[in-house]
Each structure stands twice: as C-alpha cells, then as structure tokens.
Length: 77
Image 1: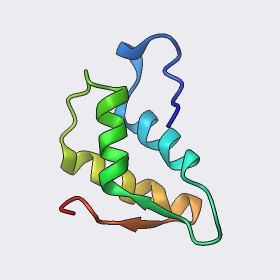
Image 2: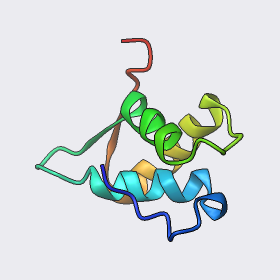
Image 3: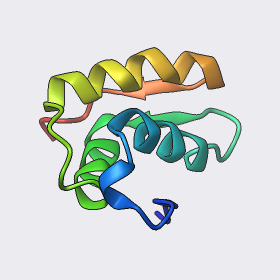
C-alpha cells in the first residue's frame, strides 16, 4: 500500500494512517478491512507512533462503518 506521509513522517498520526489505509481498501462489492494488515501497514509507515495495537483496532472499528466497511478481526491468524 502506498501512503502519502506528506514528506514529514514524524507529523503523521496513527489515525491519519488508518484513514488512508481504509480508503485504499475500498475494492469490490463487499468491503472488508483487515485488522492484521492495517496494523502491519501502520507500523511500516509510522514506526515512530506510540499507539498500541488495541488503540489501532479502536481507530479501525470507529472508522470502517463511515465507509460502509466490515472489519475482519484476523489479528491472531
């Protein structure tokens, strides 16, 4: 996934990354966002972020319905 970090990675928030990754997941008729993949992508693009995995899951769960998405709780797979 390609996420614009506005050339200032230290200024990118976890909520911003979750939002951008959610927008990129919009494909097909049934839209499902993977918790596991989204957390991994946030960690790759924002290694400086201090939010816990639980906080990232909360961001995902809060944001997904806004875009009509279902959440795949696949962290343990």
